[in-house]
Every structure is written in C-alpha cells, then in structure tokens.
Image (cartoon, rainbow, N blue to C red):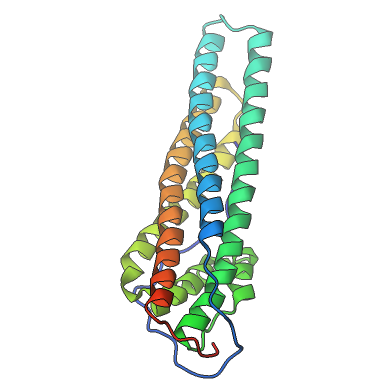
Length: 235
C-alpha cells in the first residue's frame, strides 16, 4: 500500500495570458493519438484503483477471520500475494499514465506557443521537469498548465482549481496510507491501514477523472483554436 505521489499545493485563481513577443518557432501538432493513449492508460489506472479497494476489502475479511482464529497460514500467504500483485499492477498503470501525460504536456506547451504567438514563462521541458523538483513541484506544475490554458481557454480556471484540489487530496492520502501501512504491527492497526488505503483509492479515482478532464479540455481547446485560424506566427 506504499504508493506516494509528487505533492501539489492549492492553486492561485486566475491567470493573465502572457505578453506577446518573439520566441523560438514551434508548429501546431494535433495530439489526438496521445490523448487516446492517455485515455487507455487512465482507464487502466482506474481499474487498478478499483482492484485495490476490492483487495483491501478481502484483506479486512481475512483479518476478521484471523482475529476469530479461523484464518490459516495459507490464507495469510494468499492475502500477501494478492496485495503484491495489485500493487505491481498499480505501479505499471501509474507509470504508463505519467509518461503519456508528460509527453502530452510537453507538446501542448509547444502548441500553445504556436497558436497564440506569445512568450510563455514555462518552456516545454520545464513544464514536465517541474513535477520532479522538490518543493517547487508544490506549485510550478499547476502554474505551467494554467499558463497553457490561459492562451487556449482562459475560462478554465475553475476546472483547474478542482483538479488541483483533488491532486492535493490524492497526494495527502497516499502519504497517510503509506504511513499507516508501514507502522502497522497488529490486527487493529492493519485494519485501520486498509481502511485508510480504501479512502486513498477513492480520492485517487476522483483525481483520475479530473486529470482526464484537464487533458481532454486542453486538447479540445487547442484543436478548436487551430481550426479557427490560430496564429501561425513563431511562438
């Protein structure tokens, strides 16, 4: 159950489109293919979250049997094996989703520059790199995404705020779940750890749906901007 996330902080409201100016030339590239991959990856990730909840419920049932003296050593081994498989599947789906989304955001930043003809504070590379910077990843990734929306779909601030809040909740619950799991030493503490993990999985399901909304909304906004004759000047 030790599944932690990069942390995020609460968003700042609103964002003004960056000022115009000459910067490196980029061309718009439709990302329909990448969005389709992200959809599959996020569905797989959501499936592992559901599996995690089911596995936790089965673990709680096992602990009840163990408390009543009905569980065998084989039951304990089966429980541990199942948990390991679910965690492994979770990490595979999570990493696949992270890589797909990082690739999308990198290209989306270039698209924003190509379509709007403006100077952006965040470069394509740093739009992704900020996710891996301690402390700075508390707000920089959000601001980078907010900036892309500001030149593509300025009224998306509310959606981004909800997404950011869910991401904070998922991260916090991931850390709490890991702490409870690592510190559990008896049946009562393991019960609490599994219960907290189920809350974490539930929050993560909500966050996953909102990540998809952000990705798909940004893609639609940039495609609409391009089809309506978005600026093709260097950006």
